Every structure is written in structure tokens, then in C-alpha cells.
Length: 327
Image 1 (tube, one colour):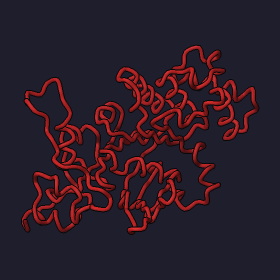
Image 2 (cartoon, rainbow, N blue to C red):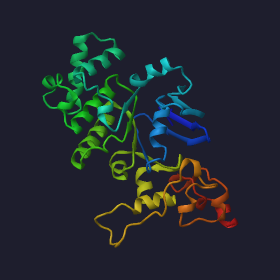
Image 3 (cartoon, rainbow, N blue to C red):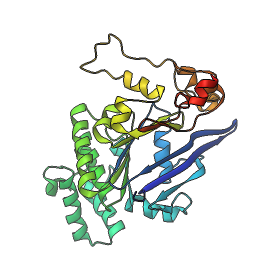
């Protein structure tokens, strides 16, 4: 086995409040190999985006990393001072946000923003950086890149702006890109183009991608492995085909059953009763137990760790023979 490019171990993110400490990400662990696409999926509030923000040091105060560690090629980065982490962010880890306008300054031409980023991380002169910027725009599929490098963000469509953001993320030849809902604001045809582009960039540049989304369809098309998050923890993680076709956690099964297919004969889609618990009201034991159709006593009192479940790992007592017998 090669050394993971990114290793997250027992990550815990907390928010101190007047009513106590809220745990938003609780004991999350996963690895990403070089050139791999790891999908992170779950409902809103599951902790997906907070996990990505914690990795690159962009947690909004008073949020803080309260436990665990993050390593990039074996080097711990979660405890670095802000200046050192800022040098890693952009140079070794790129970021793509849901709304490209949060990454692009509307007052500056896209060429100026690309050139500034390239020069900041590479030491190129202005002419070299401009050539590199045009090359990146061509690489991400911007037509007439030589001319459009002088345009402002508002002169691009949403899909084209997201391509520009991908070019920005690639400007310093990073080893990892964290893409947070990169296709959510786009229509279906443009989503498909962005997915195809990300797969090609991953293959050609050998960049690893952490793809955060709530869309299992995007995960199925893009990812090599998928981590399903629920209430701040990983409910299931494994190869994407295995998780989609043979989900091992009841929550994942519910997610997959709620997706319509052209071949299904069922009159109704699967419905997961209830809603994800608030951070102030996460139940004892398995956080999913109030909504689970297979719940038994052990689920209500003891929180499960990730257990082997066929080719995946699932945080579910159904995969522990002793727990089932005790039920």
C-alpha cells in the first residue's frame, strides 16, 4: 500500500456556545490516495462541509478542531500556524466552492485573479503567469480563452464561472482538491460537463479530489470510494459501486431507495421517517436509531464504530453478531 495523500484520523470539530459545546464532526477518519476521488455524501447538516473546512483551516469562529489530526503526505497540518497553513492552502490543496462567486472577486478580471494566484505560488513573472493562465482556461474548457481572459466574472455563465474556479484551484498544481458541492447550482447538462471535466483533470493531472455533495448521482458518476455521513459521523465508507448496489447501513439503504430509477417497478420510493437530529439533541447510541427500521436495544445505548460489512465498513450493530444475539 502506498502512503495516503491525505489522512484524517479521529477528527472532532466543536462549537462552544452559552448552552455548552456542540460537536458538529465527531471522530471522523478516512484516507485519500493519490489520484483518487473520494465522495462525501449526506443530508444537509451531516458535517460534510465542516469536515472539508477543518482540513484546510477555514472553520468559521468559534468553530475549532478539538481532537484528531490531519496529515498531508505524512506531515501533520491541522496544528500548523495560520501562515504555514495558508502556504499549503492553494499550493498543495485547492478548494472549489458551491457558488463560484464566493471564489471570484467581481471587481477584477478573471485573468488578473488567475495571474495573481499563479505568481503567488510559482514565482513566475507576469508574462509567464499570463501564458499559464490562458493554458489553464483552455484546459478547463473555456472557449476563446485568449480573449476571455480579460472578462469579468459576471460576463460568464454559472457553468463557465465554475470552470474558472477549477482553473484557479489548479493554478499551483495542487496534490488535492476539495470540491464542496461544485455542481449544485448548475443545471443537469452543465453538471454532467463539470463531472466529466473533474474526472479528466483527476486522470491527467493525477490530482486527488475530495468531492462533497448531497447528490448520490454525482457520486456514482465521479467517485472511486464514498463516505456516507450522518449527524457528524461516517455511517458507511467503501468502494462506490459496492455502497450503491449493496448498501450495508440502513441510512445508506434509505438514501439509495429514495432515488428514482428507470427500471424500478416499485410504485413508491423508500422514505426515511423523521429528520436528522439537531446538534443539541443527538440521541444516545447510534444517532440514526430513532429513524432506523432495524433498531434493537443495543442500538439505543451503545454507539457503533465502523465494522467490516462485505467490502465496506458500516457503523451499524447489524454487522456485529454478538450485538445481534444480545438483542
